[in-house]
Length: 378
Image 1: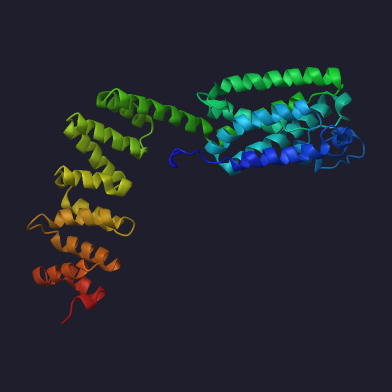
Image 2: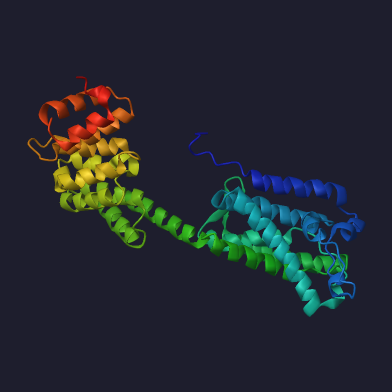
C-alpha cells in the first residue's frame, strides 16, 4: 500500500476497546461486579448523601451481559476510527469520556427527578460514551459513510438508526430476561454531549469545508471552467483558503484569462507572499508581471519577510535590482546582502562590492559597512 494513502492507526479507539474487553474478561456474567463497580444513584437521594464517586468512571468500562458488550464494541469499532481521524486522539478521548460522565449524571438526575424506583440499580456500560461518538458523528459526518466490513460502507445516518434500534432491542431483552432497567437518559445525555462537543470543536465547519473540497475535486473533472466557477463560489465564503486560491489562478491561466489571474496573484502577494514557497511572487516573475507591483512596495514587502521567508524576499529584491537605473537599487542590494550574510552565502561579498562600487556615498552602503565590516576590506 502506498504510504501516502495509508490511514493512521486509531490507537485511542483500539485502546478503549482493549481496556473495555480486559475489564469484561474479569466481570462478564458476574452480577456482583455490577454492584461493586457500577454507579448506583440511590445514595444521591438518600439522607446520608454518601456514594462512591469513582464508580461514575469505572461504570463506563463494566459490561455484565454479552449482548450489551457486543453492541457497544461494534459501534465503537465502526465509528471510533473515523471520529479519531477527524478530531484527533485527544479530542476523541475527551468526547468518549465526557459523554460517558455526562450520561451518568443525566441518569442520576432522572432518578432524582422522576424514577426513584430504579435509583438503587447499578448503572454500567459504555453506551453513553458510544452515544457521544454518534452525537459527534451526526454533525461531523452527516454526508459521510463509515466502514463496517471490508469493502462495505454505510451512511452515518444508518449507524444512528442501528444504534437506536440496538438500544430499544437491548432494553426490551434486558427487561424480559434479567429484569434490569435500561438507563435511556444516560444514552440521551451522552448523545447530546457528543453533539455539543462537535459544535465546540467546530465539526460542522469541518464537514462543510469537506463537502466543498469534494465539490471542487468533482469540478476538476469537468475542466477549468467548472473549476473556476466552483473555486470562486467557495472562496466567496472561505477567502483564506490559499490552496483553493492557487487552484483558481491556475485554472484562470489555463483558460487564457491572464488579467484576472494576475489580479488574484497580486492579491495573494499582498495577503500572504510566503504561501507555498512564494508561489504568487514566483508566478508573477514567470509571467513577466512582477512590475505590476511598484518597486517601493516590493522592497517594503521584502524587508518585512526577509527573516521568515528569505527566498521570497530575495526574489522581490532581485526583481527591483533587475530594473536598470532604479533609484531603489541600493535598498535592494542592502536587503540581498542582509539575507545572504545571515545565511553565510558567498554572494554576500558580491552584493557588498556592488554597493561599494556603485553607491559608495549612499546611506545603505554606510549601514552595510557598519554591520558587516569584514565584507568591506580597506
